[in-house]
Image 1 (spheres, rainbow, N blue to C red):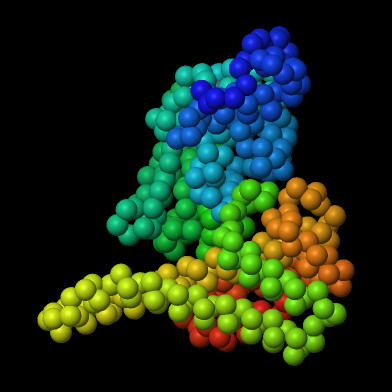
Image 2 (cartoon, rainbow, N blue to C red):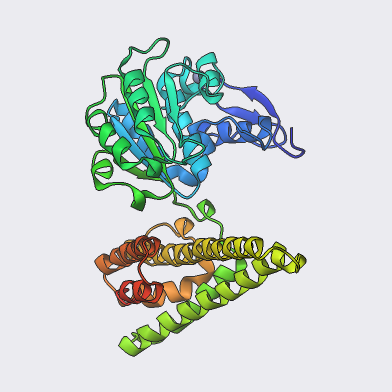
Length: 387
Ligand SMILES: [Zn+2]
C-alpha cells in the first residue's frame, strides 16, 4: 500500500466508507477509486468504472445506458490511449457480467468476484479479444471469421458475450467487409466493442454501424511536451490580434511550416549521429548504401510521427476553442494556460466554425498520411481554419 493512502476503517451498509484520519466520503464512486488506488500497484491496476474519473462524461453515458438496459450492440471507443480504452472495454464486460455488481454503486463492477477477475486477466471464455497479428500488424479476414463464429455460440458461463476488437483501424478491407453484417446485427445478448486511437482510418461503413464514444476528454487524457505547448503559445499569440486576413492566415501557416522544418532538422541531426554510417567509415559501398536508405526511412518515419503529434496538439487547442463556445466546464480544457488565445478566437467565430476547425485538422492529418505533397496538404487544409 502506498504511504499516505487512506486506510479503510469501516464499510457502512450503504457502501459509505470511513477512512482513517478523515471524514466519511459519501460518494461510492470516489470511494472505489480511493480503494483501487490503495490496493493496486501501478502495474496492471484492476478497474471499475469509478477508476476513470477523468472520463466521467463517457462513463456516465455508458452507465445510464446500462441502468436502462439500452446498450448499443456495437460501440466504437475512441481516445488517445489504447491501454485506457482496453481498460474501459474490460470494465464494461465486467459490469455486464459481474456476480455482485457495484457495492451499492449503480452500474459498476465489483472488480473482485470470480467473473470480474477472469475478465480482468483475459481468461473468461465469453469475453474475446481480437488484436492485429504480430507480423502484418493487421486484423485479417480469418480472425474476423473466427470472431463471428465465436460470437454466434451461446455464452458458456456469462450473461453477455463480449467481443473486443483492439486497434480496429487495423482491420484490412477484406476483414472489414466480412465484419459488416455481424456488426449491424450481432446475436442477442452479445456486444461488440471496437477500440481505436485513429478513428479517421476506419472505413465509413464500420463507423456508421457503431455508436461512437470518445474517451479523449479531460486534459489529463493527453500529455504534450513543453516544446509543443511553447509552440502553441506562440501560435496563439498571433491569433490574439484582430481577425487575421488571408495574409495573416498565411503568416500563421508560415509559423507552422517553420516549426516543422525545425523538427525535421533536429530529427535528421539526432538520427544521423546514431547511424552506423558515423562509426564505420570503411565499409562495403553496398552496406553503406543500405544504411543510408535505412537512415532516410527512419528520419521520414520519425518526422511523420512528430508532425502528426504537433497537429494533434493544434487539434486539442482548437477543441478548447470549441469547448469555450459551448460554455463547457473549465476542467475539460486541455491547455488552461493558453486561455487568452482561446477567448480571442472563440469571440469571433460561430459554434459551427469551431467544430469545423476540428474536422479540418483531422482531414489534414488524413491527407498527410497519403503521398500528397506536404506543403500542399497543409496549405489546402489549414487555410480553411476559421481563426
Ligand atoms: Zn464482479
